[in-house]
Image (cartoon, rainbow, N blue to C red):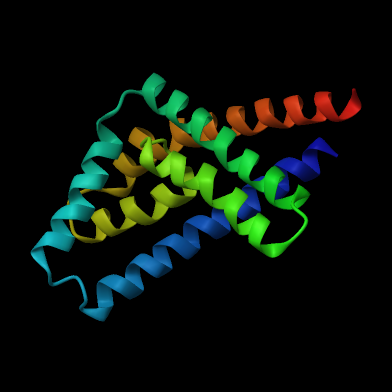
Length: 153
C-alpha cells in the first residue's frame, strides 16, 4: 500500500506541475504581463525562492506543510462552512506571511519566471522544488504522525 501512496503522490505532483506550467503559459501568452511592476514582482519572488540553500528550503518547506496539513485537519474537523473558511485561512495566511515554501505554489511562481527568461527549469527544480518538496513531505509526515498519535490517545 506504500507503493500506491507513492504512485498517488507522483501523479498528483506531476499533475500540479503540468497545471502550474499550463496556467503560467496561459498568463504569459495572454499578454497581461506587460506591467513592469508585475513582471519585476514575479522575477523578484523567483530569485528569492532560488537564493536559499538546500537546508533553508528543507526547513521552510517542512514548516509550510505543517501549517498546510494543520489547515486541512482543522477544515475537516470543522462543523460549518464559516468555521471551515476561518480555520483554513489562518494557517495558509501564516505560511505566506512568514515566507514558508510550498512546492505547488512555487511551481507557478517559478514557471512564470522561467517563461520571462529569468530562470531555467533546471534551476527551478534543483534550487527550489527538490528541497522544498522534501521539506513538504517531512512536514506532512510529522503533522500526520502527531495527529494520528493524539487521535489514538
